[in-house]
Length: 477
Image (cartoon, rainbow, N blue to C red; front, side, top):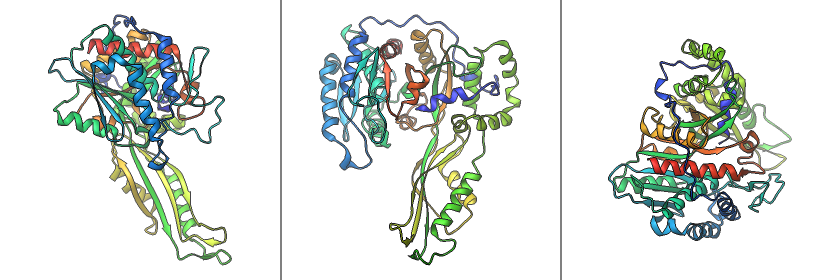
């Protein structure tokens, strides 16, 4: 989720073609302020702190998962939000994904609000506090999951609990889909999609984690910026493998398995995927540019003619901006001989690849084979999925998300963007064309940098505003 910082990398060189991306423009209106009655900021922070203290750490190895912690989390939700659990139907899917249904008595397509309650490990990170202390100090809740993604889960439940207490009935069914394995690309969200499909429910809109509200990251736009993800890049895990007979290290062979693997890695490094500026990125800059001074807006008007040049500039601006405009390849694991004095019979590298919109798993693998240009280097697909479809931004659902943002952040400029990470939301694209990725929290650069890192935290005020955002969304859906 650090990808929200890509907005900062756009810079003065990035512009937008107004006619080509007009459909991404949210209406410039001033909605009524969010009704925060019934929302207790301090109590919400205490409840989040309690849930942070339960170490629901994900792992791809089932033996490393503390199933008791996940069960304790689910039980504590019932105790912390009693009226929600008295009113909404709840089912447990698979190993612990939660799906709630708030019935409206209407046949209107439902609204789905998503979050996940599993978190990434803390091992090897230099925390200044116990990562599972749930400490509340100086108006901040500290701990793993405070933002990603227990903060959103709590904000949703705070909104629902307050509305249920006020005897509010939604105009359409509201589903809450809380995953238990998002951090390991698990199946919880897929099971939720299957459950909705089985009952013939095609969502009106889906909202999951993604962008956030940030300040001062887009040159020429001094105020707050809320970036709402319309799509996310594809994810491909690939192995590059070379083999040799091996032998004693005292008599090495020139061009052995590690050397061939190293050459393949360098070829990939030296031949990056081409940079292209997708319409969603142009839509982001167009929306933000309309909040910039006159000089910037004059440049924006000619962006359609500058697309190739702007893509090149972005690719060189920063690593975040580079990730926004091209497929990226990161070598994350290397493996060779199992002994110091034995030649490797097998050398392996793992590549974590984020596929840009407009490309596919197959086209990505095909290009890598051409770049490596060595039949002795085997490319093995471990897992992969294509980029998500681009959600609509010309409809009532996106307009409502924009209104909900402005109800709690009245000065914020709302803009679409491409999420460079993977999320559970991609599964819902099978059954909905209005899947959005947004966290309703105003976060500093330092808070964003702490995601998946040491000292993750969220301010009590941001959590409170997030609950107000969800309350507005539910009341007006």
